[in-house]
Amino acid sequence: MKLLSILLSALLSILLSALIAIPLAANAHTERPKVQTTHRVLFEVTMAGAEQWTAVLNNVENLRAAFGDTAQIEVVAHGQGLSLLVVKGNALAKRMEKLSMS
Image (tube, rainbow, N blue to C red; front, side):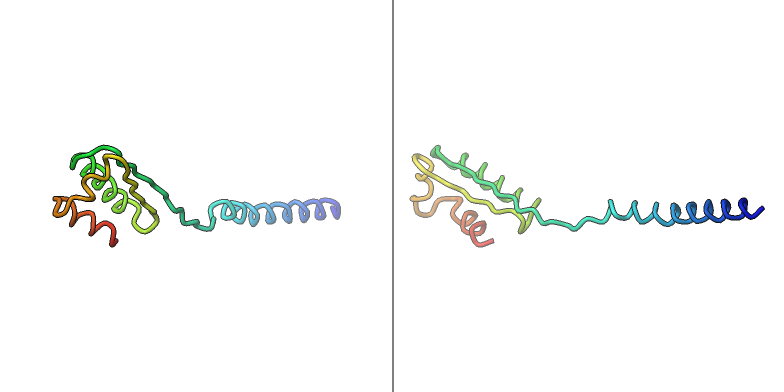
């Protein structure tokens, strides 16, 4: 009878330990520190014309809307892509300035 009591006591201790350990183990896998990811995007404009710049500016605005401050966006223009930047009073100048300030 004493042996049965010891076995039951040991079994009860094991069951209680298991019941306590299961929720602790489940929480250990779900609680992860949140890491802020920085999205780095580069657009390249090499062709002349407002159509190219309009497409790039649309993409920049969409990325800003989707990722906010976690996006680092740069636009590089060279070759014929510079033509719209050097023309005074182009139709996209205000839009470019607004995006460069945000």
